[in-house]
Length: 68
Image (cartoon, rainbow, N blue to C red):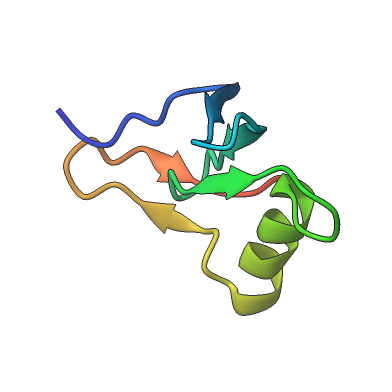
């Protein structure tokens, strides 16, 4: 089984009618809102700075890591 993260992005509509684009982090599976000063690139930089973007799925042994 293991961890499988969806690829790409999707959007949702708020109750006010605003459309919000969400992107999926392929390293941890988090949804990241596409907005000013916060985006997927910023999120991946956080992984790189904290060292949290390099792990192995214990079930599938698949390496989840960020290319440098």
